[in-house]
Length: 51
View 1: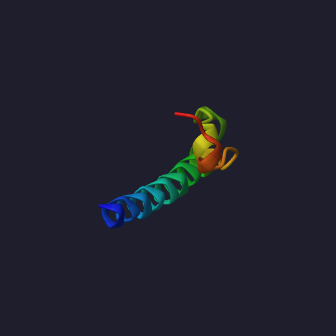
View 2 (view 1 turned 120 degrees about the vertical axis):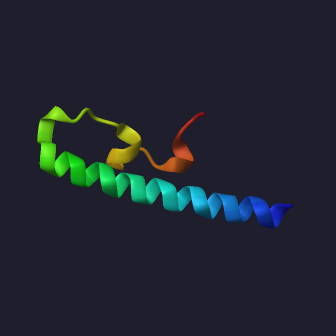
């Protein structure tokens, strides 16, 4: 069971990294018209975010 959770955690990290990359690309193209999303800006490390 723990192995499955570790795999899921790695998958979620990849999703966050890829989503951040996409967000950065869109923000680079669209500029200020794209709203700020602190989690995707890299301002808030994932480990420090409260859910």
